[in-house]
Image (cartoon, rainbow, N blue to C red; front, side):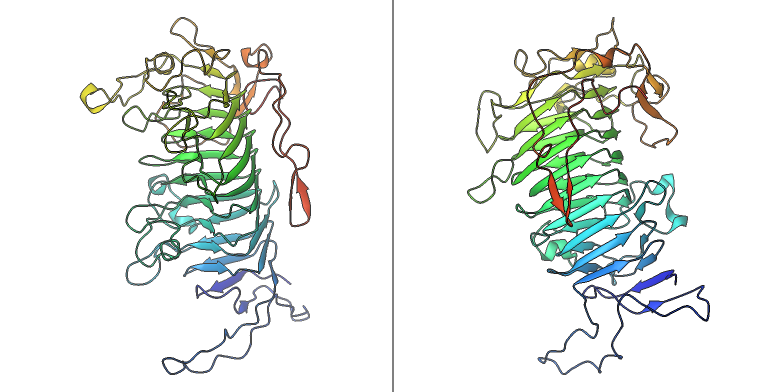
Length: 472
């Protein structure tokens, strides 16, 4: 039996009535959750009533299901939601209530999205609204995993058109995860320092804010595509204190500020130092849509322990930055001197940005070419410490990586619409195939892995080339 449409109405409901379509008369009726009879009329003020639905500990949304969200949705603490391949979760762009609060998908329990290459799970908005003009139009709130979320798997999943503003009435504001009036929703948020999160083989695109904002947990972020993350600031992957993370094999196209922002901001006695291995990622066109001297590909700050190596940075505004090097090991603002940020490859095209911020009094650099930004006298370039062995393009040697199908001079530096026909493998003879780091830094989860929903996932091995892909 096929279930084509679930109507999910209330923020407290884990599952509601099923509306089956295209069912033959002899099909057995076997809904996931058998709804109880209609609830009694609203009780008198001050009295309590139980949820009228039978909340199973584990609920599965089957393959090819379409789930329309007209209200906030919550996976309650202690419960598990499994979403099978081809399922579509469609958030209304109208929001909730008279204030049109952006719809939030809250995970207090466990969430396992199990898509496939042929049939990814999709979190999106109505198809008619999926336009280039709506890429940064803050249409819904994304997935928020709270401090009670123990496990989350996002595998072969597309998450798009997020970034709604957090306002009064937003669940994340009520839970004090984000601040009403100050924050916008990333595509994925985590907040449990003991949680385990695997985000792999997925696409996170078209959002006002960050692609992934990690405020806690052990995580593998591997083999994903990030595109058009951030309208006015924000990054593809943003890591804070309380996290241990491997970030590897990802392509990050046109993040507003950085592909990777790695920070131990929020570090305390209970929320430990952030530890990140970021290797074999390809970051393209980062930083050009952001004013000032912030951003450009990789930003390391506030005592994070970061190993950043074998990454391929193409047409980015600046190279890796590590502020406050003269204040080592200071969780408030310093740079952990045990970090290793080296053996990266900075490639440039010959084109000039169509947006140049050039006002020194306002802290603007005037940088217009990628090669120019890589060699700019930035106060946060730790010369002699960071990128000592890295390959850095100059005006006379642009270091073209020789992609199979991506013209580094044919895509404007400020473009952010991702073309699925692009192929970021490299051709034979590419300079990124040699000279990468071959030392003894090991992924945090390369051997033991992370066990999520009973299956152990391991981080990708360190590859002997720069970037996410070598040759086909």
